[in-house]
Length: 237
Image 1: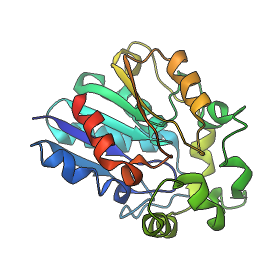
Image 2 (image 1 turned 180 degrees about the horizontal axis):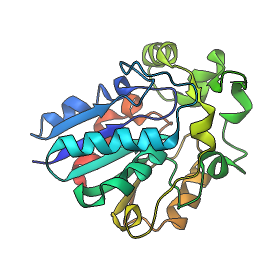
Image 3 (image 1 turned 30 degrees about the horizontal axis):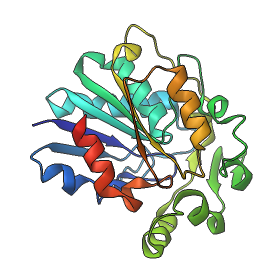
């Protein structure tokens, strides 16, 4: 039996894993899907929320899991799990990045997202500098995140998205090769992704030397569009 901790990406919540969790549990594993502060059922104020706060929240859930954990991050969740791994490297069996940002020490999400002309998040991003929040334009969400999903899943997910912290996007990962960098890394790339292009995913895979790279021919949300395939990849870890 393994323990999985699943971390959502920007704007989402633990609810995005609802089709994957039962597939992992059916194989006898323990699964904890996390709501980062200010998301889902976590009532914290997301305005000004930091990457450090996300990382500490993830580390606390890893500590609570008991066993060594397979820590999975989707999209911005890759930043959160990397930062979290700095606090608890000895508690981790692997870091799994699902079409996720994969930073080295000192790299921010905004730096990693730069020079990705095929990605559709930044062209459709609505920012409120005064509040420190941003969100993807509602009419663009199905195209950006859910292009291969069933229309009802895309509509339901789009309606549940919440604003995200600009500060978390801009913060560099404060991690070291000796701690977070020592945990084995596995990348699950999504070939039809329009939020983080496949070219950008492969650029990050190469830069951070992943032990294995697995591929799904789908969009940015394999937990809805290909849950069985995603679960099979996670079980193989």
